[in-house]
Image (cartoon, rainbow, N blue to C red; front, side, top):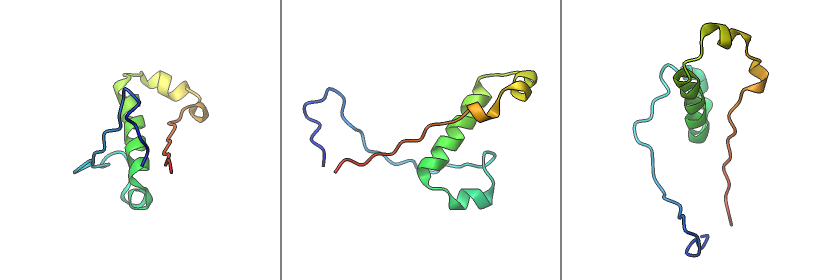
Length: 76
């Protein structure tokens, strides 16, 4: 385990209970995804929803330039 005593910020382990992707992914894809991918997909879609972008902006934006970066690192 990584010694974090010298850092001012320490990791806080936790677990997400009762997380639902209903309305964000279909059931077939949801079954194949890991938890981190589920969280990132829902967070990205929620961010777009909360941005209150107009329909015109959503239709004209370059979708290939939009994304969510998912990083999961293990320190051994």
